[in-house]
Image (tube, rainbow, N blue to C red; front, top):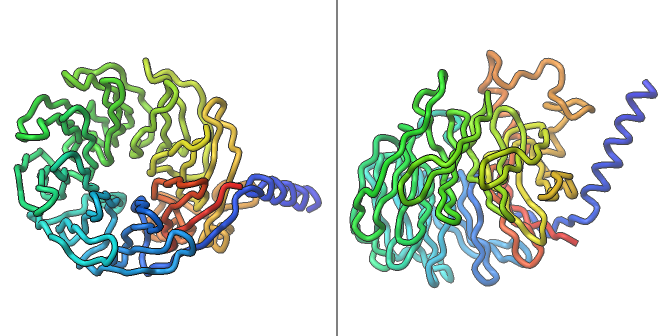
Length: 394
């Protein structure tokens, strides 16, 4: 009994020490889960929610400025273009709004959205490059849309659902689909430059590409449900290397920093640092749950969210966890999922017979699927508890 009390006390003290220089500025509440990454425009924070509304809130205090209602959950990141904000909705439409007022500028309709499975959490997010908006859809098309008028410039039909966000580099549009293909298109014409195929795995033969890629120094990096992280030559599509994380999807878009790439895993619950040149492991740290969002770097600290409802700040050189912040949902429900040792409590099965209820329990933790955004030492991120958080780094 004394041992248990001492362990609990030590854990509590360590948590307080980790959270000691993170201060909650505000939480802006919505009526749905927030998976999307916020966008910052001046003193406005812009984001979508699972309640089908898109929000503009005051960056200083989180007070709502306006909201715009769509006909489906908004799990797409927003893109800023001049004085407008562009985002997609599960109703199959892409919207452009005035940032100042929330007034609709234009709406572009796809051929319809679809969801692959219960872990298909994100929609493709729009990417603005020059005069075009590039946007993937569950209908299998990558669309190029005129930024000003919302008119179709071209579309490219892929082999599967596109929920990965495009990466644009040197006029080339890179993206993957749920059929396991990865594409490079000419950004102006939509012409196919090359197409590559993921390896596939016994249980996931398609090797679905769920989220976006990142392109750095002529190499494209992305993860797949076939347990691999890939590095492809951006000009040819030929493989440079792949790193296999046996037993786990890799959903998160990798983060490239100081010659290394960083990402979290889905099912093995780890966070990795690899050498960018060859994919060799530099360090890895265990986590209590999945990471689907990307890490961001600020002042030489990696910030990322986890499905356990905790935001972590990590030293990119060593993997040491320097900071930790817990969402309100996680504080309230953590003991329903985890024991005092930080592992799943006895009787909790993530992929057992009642996996649907288990997944609901995880989201009640205020799971962080959102990629954080750092602005003037304030970290903004969304949570499954319906809150958009602003946390000050002191």
